[in-house]
Image 1 (cartoon, rainbow, N blue to C red):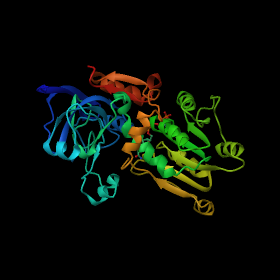
Image 2 (cartoon, protein in one colour; image 1 turned 180 degrees about the vertical axis):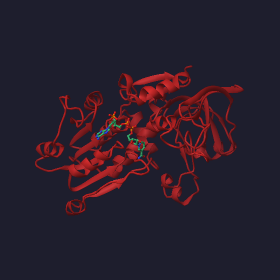
Image 3 (cartoon, rainbow, N blue to C red; image 1 turned 90 degrees about the vertical axis):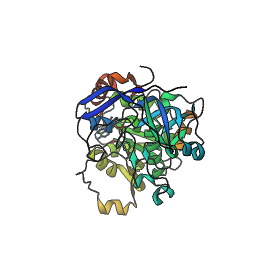
Image 4 (cartoon, protein in one colour; image 1 turned 135 degrees about the horizontal axis):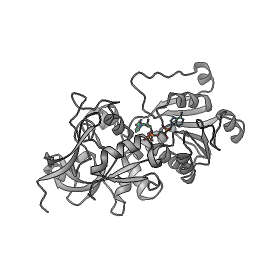
Length: 362
Ligand SMILES: NC(=O)c1ccc[n+]([C@@H]2O[C@H](COP(=O)([O-])OP(=O)(O)OC[C@H]3O[C@@H](n4cnc5c(N)ncnc54)[C@H](OP(=O)(O)O)[C@@H]3O)[C@@H](O)[C@H]2O)c1
């Protein structure tokens, strides 16, 4: 099939300035494939870039750049090396791992591309909020023929969730607390249950998200902000002890950037517990850790960054229905309405949780 000469792309120039333009298609190198984008999810970091709260990964830290790093689509064109080494061919249904570090770097060879970042699609080079994007073959992941391409567009955040939950090392019957019922926290609840957690308690600030968490498998929910909520809880530690035979939580994951949540996570985890910090901090953020108490409880505190080696597990979790994404992907909008979609997500308008931009359909 012959390719069009140009394509639609939403180009981000500077805070709150984005333009829908016609642009030439990306030219691919021998190691790359050209992906016809099906859908691209909007992440909280896209919202931060759009409003100037976070710098891009470009040389200047600024636009112009096509955002979008949660991409699913179909391969349209394949470079020679990509065909030979990656076995990719036109028509393959794929997801794009945006963190495209050098496959030959020592860290990537060790399975830790997350600590040796190269180019990042939609952050340092043009991404998936356009009809087409290019991707290195090594980071282009084939998906099963029956896997829904909308669901596939959330493989990236799910792969990050898998990495964090694996770091939590959940044991059968553990009492697990997930802070932050955003798209990622709602995926973590489902993963924690599938790893054998006994009770999962989801903690958040909005009842609509917490109620969805319950439908997705959380045994218990707690709202720590809204005093009018029927789920409002002041004494989270006391509640956990009541539910867990007098003990504090065995495992906790903090999937919000709130420092209060991290400090609460430290307070409600108990003996031989593990706390995984996942929410992205600001560059000046500093946490306080109660030293002696953490030591005497023999706690493990871990950070979790990106998803260096969990893409196959994430694809499998979607394909087998272990993690349900449809209820989390609450909104689907066309590419031309991207700025409005970003604003609505920031303002949590209409109970938005995850917005997918349906690129193919417009
Ligand atoms: N480490 C990594 O590799 C990685 C990868 C991807 C994303 N992240 C980060 O992970 C976090 C979660 O991502 P997301 O897309 O799910 O974000 P999100 O949509 O912002 O969800 C976070 C949720 O946490 C809630 N929250 C705020 N303060 C809280 C508190 N004190 N206790 C409990 N919940 C609280 C928020 O409530 P409101 O609606 O009231 O704000 C929101 O519902 C973000 O910080 C994101 O930047 C990290």
